[in-house]
Length: 56
Image 1 (cartoon, rainbow, N blue to C red):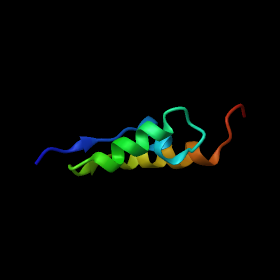
Image 2: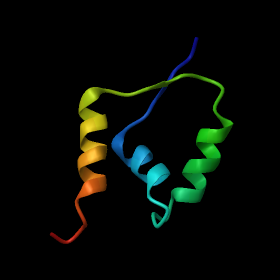
Image 3: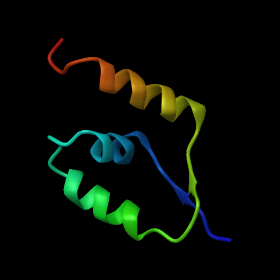
């Protein structure tokens, strides 16, 4: 079965409503018929990015 690898940028765009790609990311994720695959490193990076405001 095909799988879709998801990197930090895609997760972040999905989670951050102010991201310029948020609407496209939501639309894409809702249309997927294949399992998503990522790594612990990407999950950690996404969580860390979401906690820290930009410019600091």
